[in-house]
Length: 207
Image (cartoon, rainbow, N blue to C red):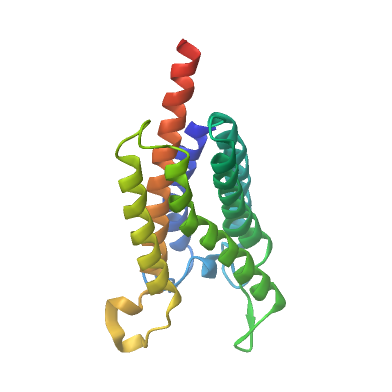
């Protein structure tokens, strides 16, 4: 599952880029990822299925994570819940509910999409604050500092993504850019955690 998580994190960027090329006038830097899943998008169904698949992977990853770090039951349980919430919100929820607008107004599906996404994003932002209690300084001296950096970058990028800047603000108004930087930051974190889990399980098997 750790290896699958690594593959999914890398593949997601490739899939988003490739599918974006099939959407005329879609900008990877200016437009949000949710736009690819809207009903008017020519890749709507494909990206929705992809998101649901990713969500399922992260749900299972969260379950495996808890089993891998059984030494710290309380902290690993909380971290596991956050990972599962991310998978259910940003993955399954975003795939099931499309970000549709009718006459410029948000539909009920759009509202559910935003709520699910918000839950997933909050879980992702909070995760680096919990993880150092699971992977402690004794086990990995640099992981705590790495988690703080991930948290700071995640908070900064999600803030730029959330705030509505005027169109004439230049690159700072590119919501698609900030959303992708947030994802890149988070996926680097998930890949790191996956590698630690893989090494931990490999060491356990050797013993």
